Structures are given as C-alpha cells and as structure tokens.
Length: 106
Image: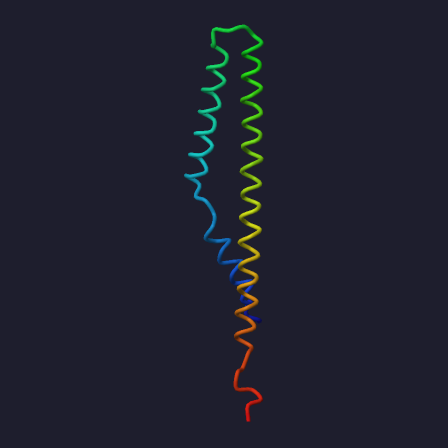
C-alpha cells in the first residue's frame, strides 16, 4: 500500500473543508426564492400598463440569469487559482523534501 503524495493530500484535505453546510444551502435557496417571488409579485401588481410590466419582468429575468452566470464564473476562477497554488506548493515541498544539501559535499 502506498502513501498518498503531497498533491493528493492537499487536494483531498481542501475538498473536505471547503464544502458549504446544508443549512447554508437551504437558507440561500429560500432567500433567493423569496426575493424572486416578491419581485415578480410586485411587478404583477404594479399599477402600470402591460408593456412597462413586461419590461421589468424581462429585466428581472436577465438579472437573475446573469447573477447565476457571474457566481459560476467567480467560483470557477477561485477554484482554478486555489488548485494552481496548491499544486505549486506541493511541487515545492516535494523538491525541498527530496533535496539533500550535504549530498556531494566532500
């Protein structure tokens, strides 16, 4: 049986500690649903003609989809930089662990 290398240990350890709790996920989903419902309810009962109402509803739809896209991009960028830093750090630690400064000194 082989022991995991420093890269495997860092990636595995960080994946276990970076997960959001179920309560946070539920709270986020409920707050998003409540905010979207309140906004759509407000647009539906706004005392204006149908065209301004449709324009506002389209704005809410665009804002919602772009917010999801932005959140995904930020998450992907953060995960990419974190993984890159962890891999670089693991490589340096491996090189330092294998380096023997007294080898060849005589």
